[in-house]
Image (cartoon, each protein chain N blue to C red):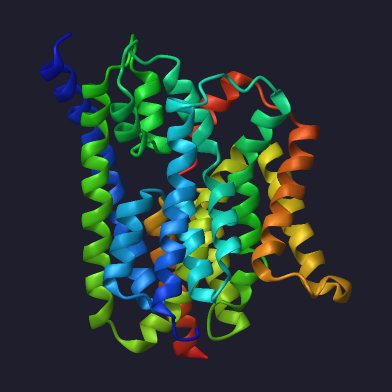
Length: 243
Length: 105
């Protein structure tokens, strides 16, 4: 009932997420601009995507000159997990929440806002969710713009070393999750093994890098899901650690 | 990295935005049923790690000026992320190590 109270509660819960996003987005902006994207394009990516792993991967592919289908499919595969979060939040939404509201706050579902909303007891109302996503959006966009702006004034030698930055972030996402779950570790190993086979065995050389990654992903996650199906409880716990 | 075709980049950005937005909003608006299949749920849950793994290896080893600096940077990233340092710390430390190793070589 109390719109103002819900909104304030959302803003309060979202503020630390926004603070946490700023440095990650800063690094993203920095990497994207160092890699050759203009600042406005890096800012546009953060503004329209609002996600870490998906936009890092997509940006990497853009910089490598991958095709539209490769960029779209890889990004989609990474972001498809949002369907589960969106489904889960949808079950707890106040009845009668309008479709425009749903389309609005749905944009702000990320691993972190999902976890925060999941931990909130009771029914979820639109004002809370709009409040929750505001600071994360601000932090993500301001961080990107700052990081992208600073990259122009960096010495060239340091910019060359930036090539590893995106991979460093990928490793920072993979390793802690692999440490927590041997299943995740084995899935990463299977996906990497598939990727190496497709890359180095000459028979497969007709497959482009983008499709190679998609095939490797389907092989790794597909085998993994068959070998180690997950429990519900495990799912929610792990989602909090992906970004 | 080759020079970028900006029209292509902008189309890619909007495709990325679309395939990010649709999974977020579809279950809230149109498709409101639970996914029951444990297999599909597990598959979706594991995909981010599989994608990131395939994107990182072996490409990380050719991401810098030479193999030695790339190995040093990768090792740094591994150790720090094993001890749960954040994304930013890991990425910046890897850059620093690559930079230093390339200065020394």
